[in-house]
Image 1 (cartoon, rainbow, N blue to C red):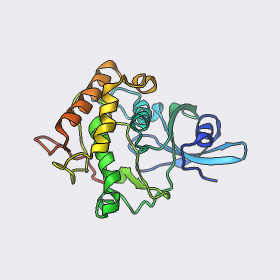
Image 2 (image 1 turned 90 degrees about the vertical axis):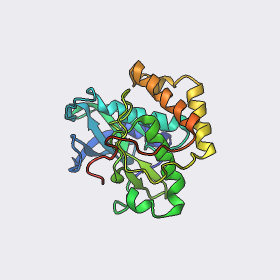
Image 3 (image 1 turned 30 degrees about the vertical axis):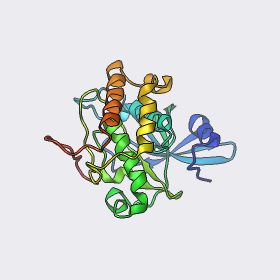
Amino acid sequence: MILVSAGPPALDLLTRGAITIKGRLPWSSNATFLVELTLEGETASAVYKPERGERPLWDFPPGLFKREIAAYHLSETLGWGLVPLTVEREGPFGEGSFQLFVPADFEQHYFTLVERAEYHHRLRLICAFDLLANNADRKSGHCLLGPDGAIHAIDNGLCFSAEPKLRTVIWDFAGQPVPAETLGDVRRLVDAELPPLLAALLAPAEQEALLARGRALVAGGRFPVQSGGRHYPWPLV
């Protein structure tokens, strides 16, 4: 049985299940593994990203896996459910993130999904999420169409820098109003203290920058348009 929900059974499996490595995911620039987790007769697949396998970057400190977890907590705090359940855990290659695997239709990605109006609400949420999280690497292939019909946002390790670093393929909504419900969710985020589970994963400057981006989005009320500089990731997919 492959679980894709974020209910208690999935949380138990991610945090306590026996780990079997099924293979390395070849398209990742860091060491990333597909694992199977087993607990009391239930199984689930997950993506394991150990800190030990991270490629050093000049503009992000070690511990990118913690940003994956922070992205999950931000999504849940907003009530958007964009990021699959993600936890911190010790694995065969040391401490890292374990994220519930989405058995997606991998022929579908942002550039195909944006052609269909029924997905625009979810894609606008991802766009707003990336603005808040300051996502430096939102590729088209990071938007997965799951078996539940929802679009899930994965590969969020290059987020939350205190410096402006937004690089994304999601520019189709530039200049359009942010939906009122979305702005309300962001307003509630910035009007309260960050939840402890999220704040503990970010440096103080990163916490303040997150809130500042939220305040700017609420004040502007529209998805931003591109300004000067490099705002697309590479490769695009």
